Amino acid sequence: GEVVRPGRDAFGFASVGLGVAGRGHSGDVCSVAGRGGSWAGRCVERRVRPAVVGPRGLWRMKTADLPVSVAEIAASTVFKKAKLEAENQRWDLWARLGEELYKRLGAEATVERVYFYYLPIFFWMEKVMDMPREGPCIVGVSCPQGGGKTTLTSFLKICFELLDQTCVIASTDDFYLTRKGQQQLAEKHSGNRLLELRGNPGTIDVDLAARTIDAVQSLRAGEETLITRYDKSAFSGLGDRAPESEFCKVEGPVDIILFEGWCVGFRPVAEDAIVDRDLEQVNGYLKTFQTVYDKFDSLLVIEVDDPSVVYRWRQEAEDKMKASGKPGMSEEQLKDFVDRYMPSYEQYLPGLYGGKVVEGPELRVKISPQRKPV
Image (tube, rainbow, N blue to C red; front, side):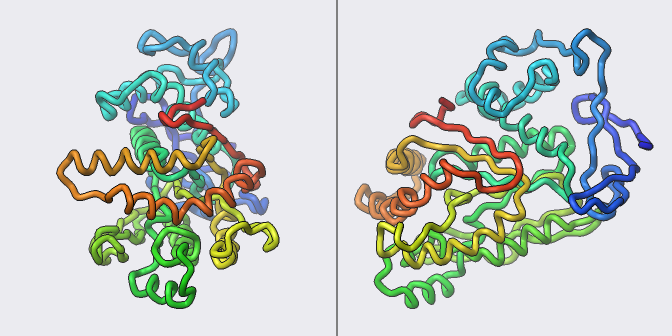
């Protein structure tokens, strides 16, 4: 049976810590401590949601504070792709989280962005977190450069933390090789334009990424670890790993880990399918990424119709930087920068968009050049 210790979350909803016997993927019985305790056996903490008596069962909600109707949200593309059920949603929580996102987004806040995009993804992740597993939930997030993945994950983190859930974000960018390591890689593959500078598989320390995920996943209460950070401005923009004093400290226990990157989910192809000679080495390095994918409980894929939209998105980012008084790339430099990524997009996106990557749930959301779900 369950021993329930009732409490209140950030919004006054009933929340609980459990002392239960549960089962991980292995089937072994292990105990689960409530929030603030240890992850005994590193099994998931289960959240029990209160049921309210009514003709349709769970969570009779107040919807007066929603700026859009429940019917419109339920009819939206991402809501349906996430296989959410309107009758089981906590609509008062949707309203309160939406209100907070509106405050954070300011002038950029829209109903479409908050209620048709960000929040359906958040509640999909909440559903994934409720699945049996060992340790914190790990979700891969794949999205082309400039598609808004950093903004999306930062707002998902806000939502989790408002519910007193610890969310950690790690990126492939965090694990680029040191400047010395990048120089050695470029020398090893002299003449390969795709490995000359950071970015493509091969320039990312996958072993470090895998060990970092393991370290974060195993944290218990009172324990901490560090996530490396990368300084893209070092060596006149060539980049280098930041000093340890700038690493991100993570304290346990953790509820969910979001691992995001432009090439997350890319998988190697057969040698005779490689269309660019410089991709031969990249394809070999990509084989090591499976060690990270095997850790994912689920995968979020933000798709685009045409990867060439990355040129436009990068130009928009450069224009904003220049408008704020910061130096930016020239049009020629920008084109050269994106050109080094485009062969990988063209080679590996079809496989990512056309096949399943992880054993767990996958949510695929296509966005327009305006970064809106379609």
